[in-house]
Image (tube, rainbow, N blue to C red; front, side):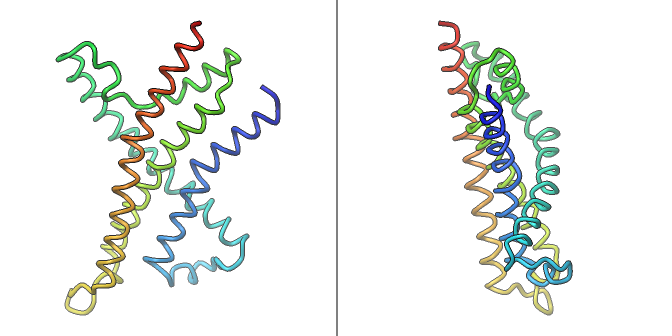
Length: 196
């Protein structure tokens, strides 16, 4: 692998895992908590402020979402996979999640992994976006902005919350169904091609 290819993969991975989700988080922070940005001095009208806040939120929320994946999602999928395996031996990948360390294995074998990096990155990106937006929506619900006096919910707040929940649902589907399957199928094809 050339230095340029390695840098391109690293940039692609960082963009999909931290920067792009961070920019989406910034949009939801601006939607849910507009005056918090001013309190911390983040000026989103400047590209440096937007990029800096995106990277900051991307790293902070991604560390939380990765923990949720490791502590909750992976164990649930593991148990579902074991149950399926006991019922039927031909269901190898039904509840399998992408095996990210395979990237290192393939690179050590000098195989090109650019496409696999992109597919795995999409899985991680959409998982980060879904869980991060869900966390921001939960924070919004418990924050005083959500309620008017006497705890009567405003229609605007319900619309904002509904939008966040919709983005969560779309991205959790894209991650745990669409890109999970795409990752597994890509690895399957990759293994077949590299055996020949």
